[in-house]
Image 1 (cartoon, helix red, strand yellow):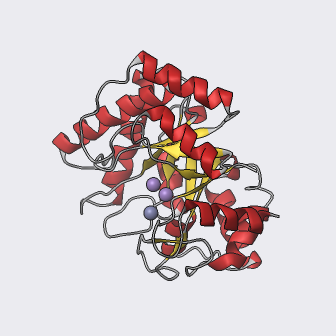
Image 2 (spheres, rainbow, N blue to C red):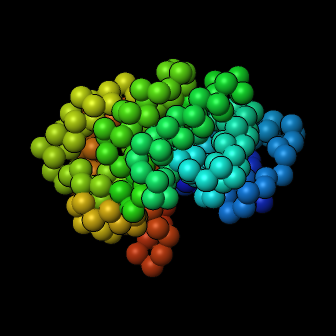
Image 3 (cartoon, rainbow, N blue to C red):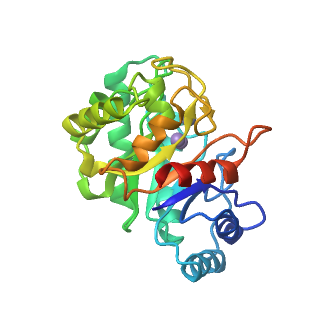
Length: 279
Ligand code: MN
Ligand code: MN
Ligand code: ZN
């Protein structure tokens, strides 16, 4: 199976590949640059080459880029929307040059202007970015936990965004288990997992699902709290993750950990847990 974690690029981009190898990942996710600022240093051809070569050397076929923290492609504020769009364009380009198949994007916040405004903005940003960058990268919209003003915590909202997308083959979904659970989609039992994925299929379509962010949840079902927990130690629990890992629609997808690193564990313990539950 494709099991991995979000690894750091500290030092250099290709060091992320070493970290993924060391952890025993078969896939991984990175920020292509420091995620905390608006500005990124341009990606040098040598950096991209070193990264791609190392990925190939270690046999990684699928790896994922994640957008930095600041952009909000659902923003109704013109200035911040423009900056977010510029950042999206840049990240689609960088992901392509690094040989990353997917770019995960948080759908964002409408900042109080309402879902309709947010949905239009997201679609506009994605369409514009894909019209400006010609490569093989697929943008994955990540379901949200349903925090105040967030866009895309309900499958129906995501469907509405997809209905406005002009590049159908270049857009898919990243399903974050913590966010889904916090948004009110139960994942604790076999029945719950099957019902949630049936809903997903009916509303969005399981063919759109490309990556799973495997995170347990500190918050309860429908709590709208986006706080990740170690696999099996949160409100979803081991049983839920066993069912997720064995579900036929998810079995072949990359599962990427974004779990905490603290006294209770790290990526190594969580990866071991996923591998055990996947057996
Ligand atoms: Mn995310
Ligand atoms: Mn996530
Ligand atoms: Zn989260």
